[in-house]
Image (cartoon, rainbow, N blue to C red; front, side, top):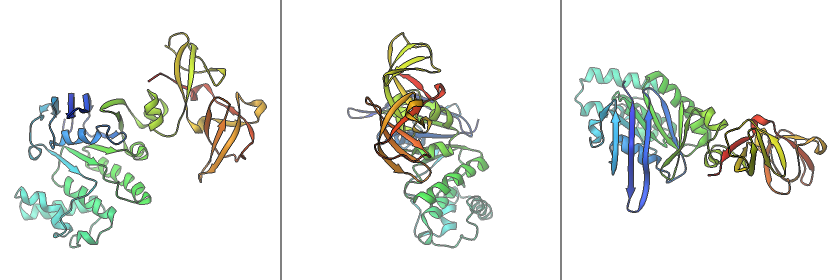
Length: 344
């Protein structure tokens, strides 16, 4: 398979700081996989190890079944796009894209064909003779991607490449990147700390923290079924409440018992109860499973962000119904929206 990557018991530390703690990860051919996590979680180090810019202290890195652990970067069929695009300012667009092909001494007619194809792929035909300094940030990013893809790598690594772009351009480029990946049909490994980017583009998300993988899954799995409180809190907003599992499908939190859909916990086991703000319905106080007092209301454009205190916990609620500070409200939560997880 052209772009399969395996990291087996990969350990990396700098001094006493463990950056990757015996990491095990398989990246499938033609997959768009995102390494997601806060600064310092090990995601960029993982990317650098795959690229060959760093070597692990122990463990093995396989590319298409071949041991690449100590193989230098130029001998791996892997290319990297960085946040700072590192374009050559003394070269025009055509020569920037052609650079790697010239190093390989590819014939001029083939270079012209390949560069033309890359410009078509990134929607920049006609830009061949432009100075890269005259391009916008989004256009420069496309040139950097074209320069990486023209060498026909098995794997493209992207280290927070949208970080320098403004919000609207970044959102447009998210769709463009996913479209490019589907058209070229190679493996993309993407690093970001932005959950929206990960949820928008990825086939698979790997959530990392402190050098360890917290959860691997599809965007829907990661968002709807977080495996621990860290993932729940990092992927979107979450209310994380202390609770106790009385038995299968029965949990107590905020002073009352709820039906849930989880099982397999010890009787009376302390748990974290995770509820997304959009999964709480605001109702009349007398009709609510919980009663609360509104402490603050902020209009967010598509919903109101309401902070409501039940006496033991302040819940965040996303609702299209406006409330006023001091209002008494009821809160309804259906069993499917109550996620139970073991204490971290």
